[in-house]
Amino acid sequence: MENITPEELKSRLDKGEQVNMVDVREPHEREEFNIGGTHLPLGDIRSMQTDSIDELKDAEVIVYCRSGNRSGQAAMILETAGFTNVKNLTGGMLAWQEKFGA
Image 1 (cartoon, rainbow, N blue to C red):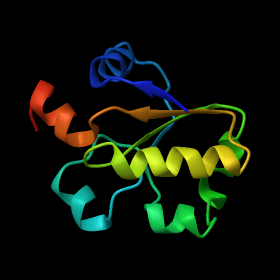
Image 2: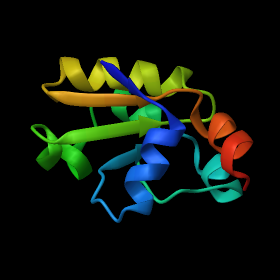
Image 3: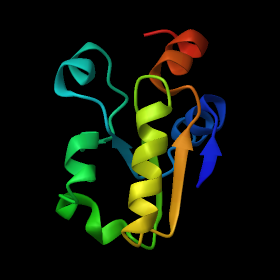
Image 4: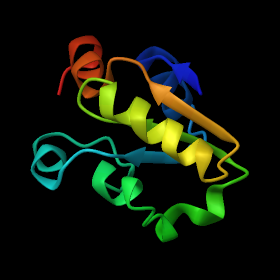
C-alpha cells in the first residue's frame, strides 16, 4: 500500500484528472463532509462486498476515511483481494479539512 497526501490528491482533482476514490466511512460521516468518492464502508470491504469497485482491480484506487486509519485497513484488505494499485489518503478527511476547509 502506498500513501497519497491531501495536497497531491487535491492537485490531481483540480487538474480535472479522473481519480478513483473510495470513501470507507460510515454514512453519517459522509453526510457531514464528502469529496465525491464511491461510498463503500469498511464493514462491507471486510466482508468482501466489493462488487461496486471490482472493475478497478487493476486501476489506481485511493481510499479515505476520517483520519486514515480505517482506510489503511481497507487498503490492505483490498490488496489481499487482488487490487493492484491502492493508495491511502494520509490523515483522511481531518487532514483534508485542515488544509482546505470544509
